[in-house]
Image (cartoon, rainbow, N blue to C red):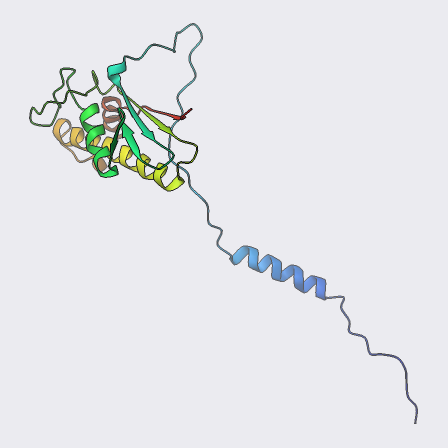
Length: 185
């Protein structure tokens, strides 16, 4: 009887091909989630020869501050996040005399001159949580959405989801979303 001391070999030549095919299969079939950010349009550059750093009247600035403890402050008063939307709407929506455009004559002493001149200044502390920052952004967006929708119904006699491009531009021009973001010092 004859014994061979050779060990049997496994042909691994096609292993690289199989691994490559599996890699391609998983890349093609896997769903890749895409993170989405906050939808904001950056301001256009200042045209040459124009002065674009105009002074904004203090009355036209709503200062919203999120401190390091995630507390929301307006004019040094701590407010609940549930109050932010209504405060923002009252600040934006008026006739320059403190009356709200579509609020049945309600007065607001802390209101901007016009919605076109109103600026919401959002400042946050270095330790502000992302969750609180996004929650505040959502409330500010809701305020603008509700004002635009009310304008659409009262002026254009249509809900905001049925507007043409021209009508949508008119609504956005009536209530431009002017938001200034900065980190507190």
